[in-house]
Image 1 (cartoon, rainbow, N blue to C red):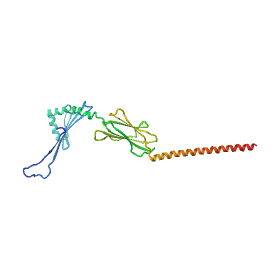
Image 2: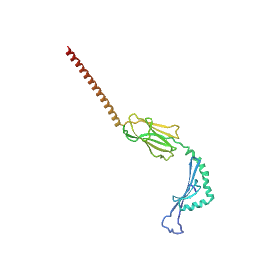
Image 3: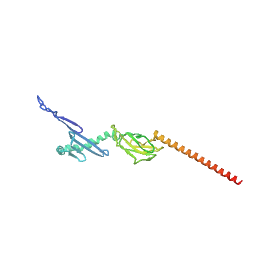
Image 4: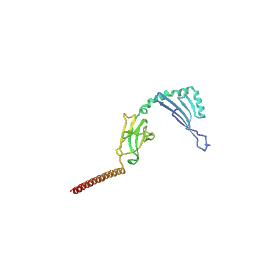
Length: 261
């Protein structure tokens, strides 16, 4: 009965007239089998559960080796099943008769299945130099779910400023994750999102260089122009000062010569 859902409808019939005015009640009986593979087929746990109207009342656990009850109705059922030698032996044998063979059937497209990740970097806020920015590394389409994503700033790994989303399921046996870096950006900074995954022969690195915004570019140009103009004024002032000092020195020498004559 494992894996089968049976829908039973109770209906009252008479030869002439139906004496009931309300609709008949529906009852749903379900049986579910699950094989849990811990370290491949070296350690397998088998669970067999039974439910009535979505309420589980009894189950078999291969780690325990017998049926267990979940409510009063299950007490009666579990006690009966545990008293039947053939039923108990069948349940205990499922690890070898069902779980272990099915593992070999499903292994090529589950355990051995690998899908390489796609990696891209986006800046989720308007870039502003010298202020906090949030850069996101989006890693998508990978399987299995174990993955390592590292942020590097100017070749140095970032730690405290890095946060990550939960692992997102795409619904097609692949996963997605977003890893964010909050940092200040200076002109010339470089950023790298590095991804390590079992589907890759070597880590994948995607580089990102900040595209300076118009306002930030204007600020930077204003600063450069101000620095250049300031330097020019200083140089002009210094030249004027040196020339005036040289003129005064010559005038003093001429006066001394006239006095001596």
